[in-house]
Length: 350
Ligand code: UDP
Image 1 (cartoon, protein in one colour):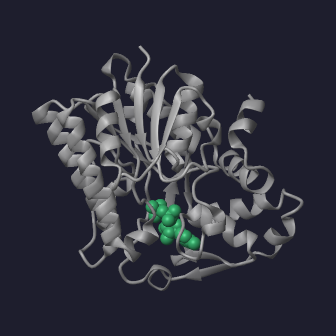
Image 2 (image 1 turned 60 degrees about the vertical axis):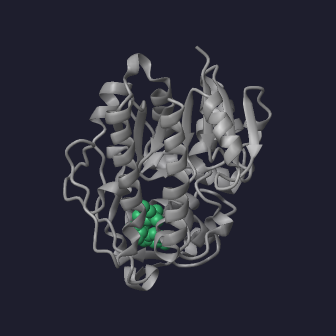
């Protein structure tokens, strides 16, 4: 059956990649809304892609109409950048919680399937070696550590969605991205110091001849996940073969890509040296250690390690990530340094 999928935030990092995979792998229709469309030129031309330029806090009628019209709702509008959790927590709350709760309630009302982005951030400072969807504790710091507002908001959304599933029959799936990285993550030209996610920030710093700042020495670890791998899991969730994803939570991450931030920085610098036009910049780069307090302020608290268990995704979705660190970073650098046409390039190299 051809499905109608509503994607809010369709021009975002996940939304743009998800749309492209849906259009190329399935026969589903996409109804997508976003405030801009710079990341989706290939989708816009497609006959099964219907774009509306709008804002989820304003265009409520368009959204209500399309929730009724579609089979599956994927609300991806959210601020998911740690530096903004400490700089503007109220804005994070208004958008990530208030605006999204309206969408959740309409999915309940119109009995639509909801695929909702939770986050790896939800596990906070959990001590487990691998974070498990059903047994790991969610460990956050004290209230003045404002970094945790995002994690806390997502936790409450997860709990409310779970409750609607258990008590009012909502068909839902929660998915938790673990540090997705890829060509369209953030705009590297916009990556002012401390305003972007780590890979974009480091690329920006290398290209602008600035020091790479290793917060607290860069010992903290993340499991990075290539966007195409991550989105493959989301397509499988929407597909929901034999109801494999209904009422479930999935970590979407790559446990084999567990690296320290310092290792990430070193690999990036190494790779930039392989681009003749940019080698001179990578040769000059310096690493500077900086305390998290100085970099983010006192409202920040870091996560020391973050490795997902992906047993649930393997067993239920038949999913496994395949892209390694160097390939992931190379594809991201190709996009920024050589050409801005990732979809075309991916098609040509298939
Ligand atoms: N980080 C860093 N230097 C930077 C930016 C980030 O050392 O210029 C660190 C940050 O403190 C965190 C990690 O990189 O430990 C990942 O940060 P990111 O903002 O990508 O997101 P997170 O994984 O914390 O959600």
